[in-house]
Every structure is written in C-alpha cells, then in structure tokens.
Image 1 (spheres, rainbow, N blue to C red):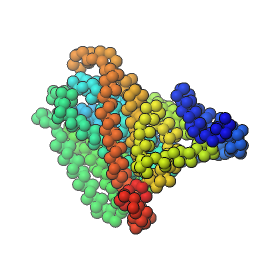
Image 2 (cartoon, rainbow, N blue to C red; image 1 turned 120 degrees about the vertical axis):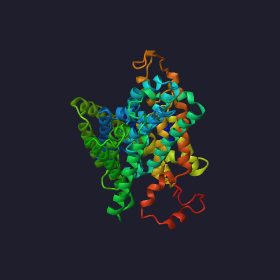
Image 3 (cartoon, helix red, strand yellow; image 1 turned 45 degrees about the vertical axis):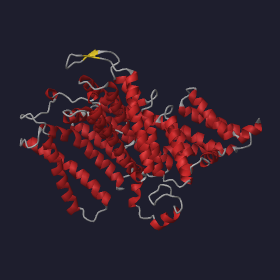
Length: 546
C-alpha cells in the first residue's frame, strides 16, 4: 500500500482536492489543507524534506508583495463606484431610447451597454444586476420573449470577463507570468468580436423571429425632436465632426509618435471634443445638437474618456496596470462627484464590496500557493505534463482538451477557482509546447466566461434570477398584467449564447492573429528565427506555436 501511495501520490493528491470541493468544503481552505496534509504525508514517506514547509511564509509574503494584484481592488472599486453612481442606468435609458424605434432595439442597446459596462466596471455581478433591474422590466413591458430578454442580459453582463480591464485577465496574466498590458491588448479584438456575434444573433432574431424582439412604440420615446424625428442624424454628424477634428489634431501635432500613442491620443481627444461640443451647445443655448445627441454624449462620453485614459496609458506603457487602476479609481470618484452622486454611503458600499471580492481572491491564491508548493514537490507538475503531452494531436490536441476541460470544470468552479487551481497546472505544459502564453490566456478567459452562463450553476443566471420577477405583477406604466419570469426561461435563454461563446473560442483558435497582434510592436523578434522555429510544423509565421 505504501509503495502504491509513493508511486501515485500526485494523482491521489489531485483526486482528494476534487473530493473536498465536491463535499462543499470552501475552496481556499480545501487547497491549503490538502497541501499541508500531503506535505506531512510526503515527509513521513520520505518523499519530501521538512525544510519544504519553511518556504511557505516566503511564498505567502510574496503574494502580499505582488504589485500586479493591487490592480484588482482599484479596478473593482472603479467599476462599483461608477455603477452605484447611476452610470449604468443613464447608459441603458439613453441607448435604449436611441435604438428603441428599430426592431430588436432594446436588445441591441443591452449588448452595447454590456460592452461599455464591461470596459468600465469589469465586474459581472454589477453589470448583470444593473441591466436586469433597469432593462428587463422594459423588455417585458413591450413584449420581448422572456428567454431572449434574459439571455441577452446575462450574456452581455459576462462581457466583463474578456473586455479589459477584466479582473480575470489580471489574474491570468499574473498566473501565466505575462504583462497585464499584453493580455489586455490581446483580448481587445476577441472581446469586440464576441460583442459583434451577440449583435449578429439579435439581428438574426429580428429577421427570422421578429415577434420575439419587437420595436418600442413611437409614443413612448422620450427624446424626440419637435418635428417628430429621432435626432440620430445630429448625433452621427457630431461624432463624425469630433472624429475629423481629433484626427487632424493628432496627425499634425503628434507626427512621428508611435502608433499606439497616436491611437490612444486620438480616441481620448475625440471623446473630449465631442463632450465639449455638447457642453458649449447647451451652455450657449445654440440648439445645434438634437436632444438625443446631447443626452447620448453626456451619458456615454465621460465613462468612455475614462476608459481611453486608463487603458490607453497601460497600452502605451506610460502606466502600469496598478497605476492605471489607481487613476481609474480617482477618475470614478471625480465623475460621481461631477454628477452630484458622490455620497458617503455609496463610497462605503463600494469599498466594502471591493474588500470582500479582493479578500476572496487573495485567500484562494494563498490556498493555491500552498497546494502548488506540495504538488510540485511530489512531481505533480511532471505528472500533469506527461499526461497532457501524450495526448493525440500535439499542440492542437492539447488545446482542444484544455478547452473542453475548462468548459466542463466551469459547471462547478467559478473563474477565481479555475484561475488559481487549473492555470498553474496547465500553464507550464503550454509553455513547454511553445504556445504563446497571451493567446493561451485569452483562450482560457473565453472558456472561463462560459462558467457564468452554464445552467444550472452559472453565476450570471443566479444574479439575474435574484432581480427577475418571480411572480406576476402589474406594470406601473401600462397597467398591464405581466407574467413572471421562470428559472427555466432564464436557462433556455442562456443556451444560444453559450453556443456563440464556443464559436468565439473556435475562431480564436483558428485565427490566432486575433490575439497575437499584440506582438506587432515588439522589435526583439527576428522573423527569420520564427520561420526556422516553425519549419515543418504546418503552421504559418503567425502561429501561436513558436
């Protein structure tokens, strides 16, 4: 028996961890207890030295000294404060009015706002609950299919996992040992692609199932012009004019600067110019912009400017993710103050939730560090590597297995647990195969995103269930009797979006340039060397296997 345990201590250790979690033991303590218990077992069996345990304090203090993880509380606080200051409500109301006249307009608005909230909050719970409270009653009021409405809201809320400044990307970058800025750059196009796929699905519904996504009646649109028009042309013209002025300014004032710097300056100046145009128009009473144009600019531009400023400084290397997060937190305070919505209670609520979420992440990270220390000491990493390297299909076989494995594991584990338990095991194997680690991290992030949508354990579905009406009610506006939203309808609504997420994973696998474009600015890579490295592998020079 002793010989069997010595020969198989790594798989036994991993199986016991799974057993503890299935029994409902808290993940952080399951990881730590498993690591400590098997460390003592290893010492008793003569596999490990007692000196191994002396390394634990250094490992734990190393977590506390990790500057990258400081970005977690900063970005969390920024997002929560913006959400509590009414930004989500303003965005949903304004964009809903803008898209409302067209069929499926409310669904388009929810996806667009979901992407904007993802880029400002980075917190799934805040996005889903905000959109569920604000947009779901309106969608039900005007006859949206319940499965479509709930699916769009839940899926749009999960965009916070892949669109920077995603907390998931920060953790993955730390676990994979890659710069957060590179992870953010690599995730931009997949995040926008996923948003576009959601939009395409809504567009498909407007053509083939129009009754599920009706347009809003014209009489309920609040921001109409005196002549009855929507005023959308004024918005397009103002945005285009701001873009032209911004382009000309960057072209002549920043000629010779790196491309990334010019792009960031262009987007930031565009948002500032558009806001100034609307502000001058309102202050002087010129009435050059329509009501919906002014409303959209004042609701959308301030958070967009904050996004461009925070992420832009990270992308161009002017600020670290931690510094960018701190700047974003201060910016959120200033925006809330400018809107007159900065109160002590809102700040306290945001700080308390930030503390809880950050503590949750750090405790799991401490537990995973203890587990990983023992697991690697008993050669568990070699066991995992031998197990995965021997899969048929080489690198592609490994990636397909990892995608399926993470997809299934996401039924039971949330993204923190997946990042701290699974990534330390899979990352070294991927690196040994020559897989681009940023591309690998974005693939994992897209897969982990499905953990929020899986019936019956998806957290986004739970968040939406908590705010969706569970009993029939009388609508306050129309006076009609509105039927409740069932849990089954929420689950059914999530299925098409899970399929879309799987399609996005396949596209990123087949078109690695969606992620690996982040390397275009790197000068230390010799193309000739890349060509020699991949010779005979069947992959091009843009392959992530190099």
